[in-house]
Image (cartoon, rainbow, N blue to C red; front, side):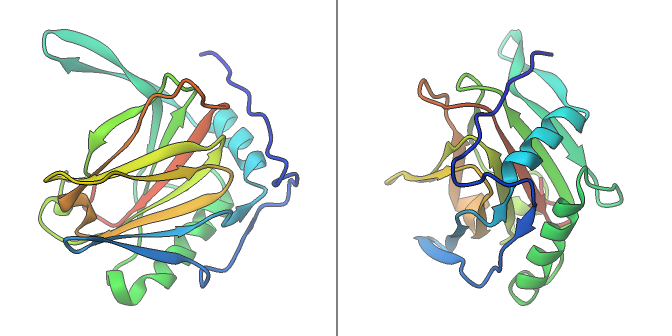
Length: 209
């Protein structure tokens, strides 16, 4: 597996991993019952976390059927079920903080963590909603913490409309809530100008994939 090295952010030059308060998070109402919350730089020292995850997580490369071809999934993946220990204590802390902050609105904790490693601008994820399981029929939340070089997360209404763009990296947090997984789609497109590798950590409640 080829190593992809991160060029550190000038704004994140510390090895001390520290989560900020969540009270500064900003909500954007998307429409049709969907919304996103965003908090840039929630995690300080995120470049150090990127290096740890890139080296220590048991990444897997998957292949999927597309029409008559067997093609490589253009990113590396890892998944931690509810009973599994996350690959760094700060991720356990982040999951607890998010569960506490959204307890009244979500009504249940975040329990699983899916990780995606975008090695360079050629890695991507196509338009989709997290609709495997309860997300297909119920309002829910998916919280994404990004470390490494920023990549654009794009969101668009399922029935057509204007695309929303959010660059995410270096400890940024975004939470997709309400009907977002049913009424909107999101993607990370390929990019010729991506500065380097990125890892996203997606926290989800039970039964949402």
